[in-house]
Amino acid sequence: MKPIFSRGPSLQWRLLLLVVVSFVIIFLDHWQHRFDAARFYLNSLVTPIQYLADAPTRLLSWSSGELTTRSRLKEQNAQLKNQLLEMSERLQHLTFLEQENNQLRALLGSQPRTDPRKMVAEVMTVDSDPFTLQIMINKGRNSGVYEGQPVLDAQGLIGQVISVGPSSARVLLITDATHAVPVRVARNGIRAIASGTGQIDELSLSHVPHRSDIKVGDLLLSSGLGGRFPEGYPVAKVTSVFSDEGKPFARVLAKPLAQLDRLRYLLLIWPNERAAAPPPDPHASKGQKP
Image (cartoon, rainbow, N blue to C red; front, side, top):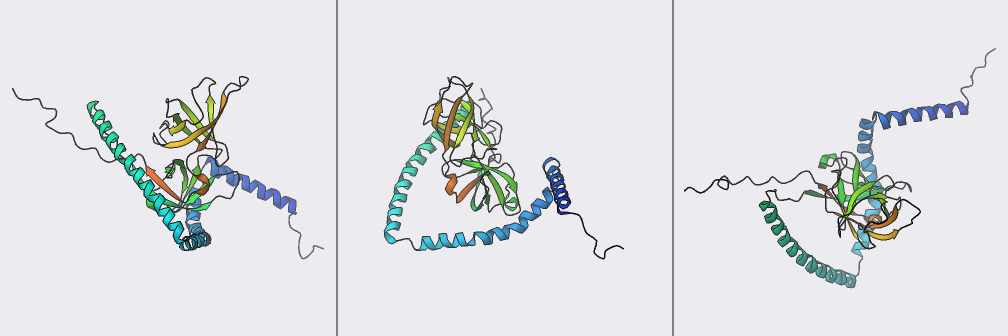
């Protein structure tokens, strides 16, 4: 006689089935990108929840700003005035250098460089996974954000966009263990690859020969190689150089210039969207009539 309530599969078989299904989903997502559309719509659904989760932080930040003392505001105002004077002087000098550079490029027959399009974004959340250095920002596909887009702050390069939703995007920081940036030393132009170490404030330069002229304090700039990051943006400063003759390469560590542990406002850039160059003068190529 059969029992009324038949016994189902054991817990071990259920666990095995879940593991197999999980591996199948991971394989389809990673190699065949079958769930990109689902992830896109899930990002759209999760974005309002992220805004709500971030609301207490925004409220605390607003309240702390409102409660700042008058003396502190005066001190900050004086500091900002001094910084404004310094930046104005640098801007005047950079404007002169830019004009001179454009004149030299015109003499060489090259088109003058123009600034890329920019947009300010705000950090919504920081990834809580200790093995992944990622953040979520409040700009997405509706604002023209795309995967692979460079992201900066006031000091230097932060990272790049790795996934985009309608109104939010995920940014991978340059110190993540899976990230790497082609760089060059500002002092002498030596090229290298700055790889993330998984530590929020540390980069490592890969495959640097022992005799390379790299010193502590050298400024590292993006080299523009690979086409992902535009050339000339500050990345990091060299903090230590270890040369062990028993190893094939020197160990070079650097600290990012961007304040990756206190990010709030970021800058998205479109390096491939340049302003249209002025049309050539039709009379410039004509010789004088005899």
